[in-house]
Length: 552
Image 1 (cartoon, rainbow, N blue to C red):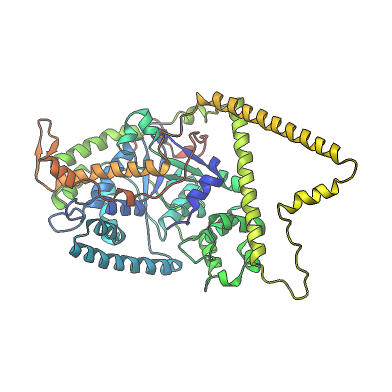
Image 2 (cartoon, helix red, strand yellow):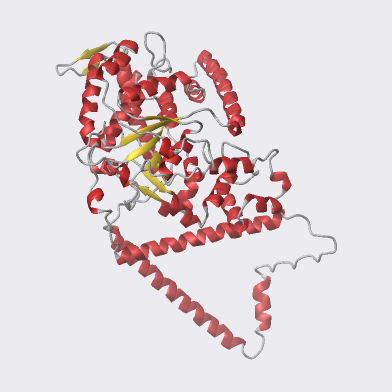
């Protein structure tokens, strides 16, 4: 689950912390990837169009996760990314309650899927199968073996994968953490990347690449925007809702922000909040301690190394053990070897330092206006909670005087008129009318100034109407990537023909439709909207491949 509602909240209250990156901007970057999250996406997305089941080998074992990871890993390498795959270890004790809930949901989903299958309800069957997906230990072992044969580093976390990724990022062992779980920020990851898929659109034209929706969230900027310390941010995330304890009833991200902003810590919040809203066994202190000091392998003891591609081992694993098509595996190996040169490229700032772009005066003015609007929104949120707290503070003590009744709109003009019944009434009315006219003129001047600013900026920015949101773009990316992996797995299952160049074609269009992606919308996680400006470079440069060295 991660942190409930955090992505949208960051997009609304700290937009400067989110930047949209071009796919080619990660060349030479060492990035820690939450492999467990990727595995779940592949198990959901890569399925047969007729049976709704995952693809299997001759022994009946699932191969969807192998096809998906193979396809995505090669795409990352082709874009110059140097991935480090991190796998979950044993779940923490604090997560036992959340895991029990998930087991119950899976079991009920399996029962509902069987019922839908008997009734012939295709849509309901598809929905329930997605809910019943489970990544097993064997699935993890299969993918670890695949990645090692590809020469890619594998890190086995003692506990949570995102906590281990955060440890590597904080200590600059890697440049960023790539996961859809926002709690990597709560664990202290200084950079979080979302939607790192590199589908077909990423390798196409510039316009398509821009719509890929790869977002980078910068933790120091986020804390600066929210005016939180890391400890306060952890308390805020606990109140939003996490995997390790319950939360206050009726409290979402906005209310949690107001509470922490006003009181500073959960202990002080509990002194003023209604006791009925506090859940039984609210172990926030244990959850806080786990976020601050998770069970991880220290970064200086994690060995990250890229090896040679084991061509014979890959062929044996994919072709002989899992019945992948031999010609397609040869094509994958060719792409792997070609991608090695791409990952060995060195970034220019390794020689010349980070580039600095000077903003225009117009951009400074626009940023100042956005900052003012953001501060107003934050202040409204705090005031809104203060009003809410006043309502729930409890009944008035006995003997306290009742508050004065608010004046109705009809009473106010009458009282003002009575006050002005003296000889100065006429002059006061004329002065009021003059002030109103001046106010209207001032508003008109501001409106014209904003119009001129918008017209000047029109040539520099795209019309937001035609640009897809990050959430839609992410679904498109996962859909395109999983569609290709689905087609690959389908062709590996047999019944395909080869063309003159050695590539394979489906025997009919109907068969291609059957192998289309069925679960793409459920495979993605909604993401906050980002801005088009890129992050300033300059950190994590020790993780860039030096010139003259090999990436594997």
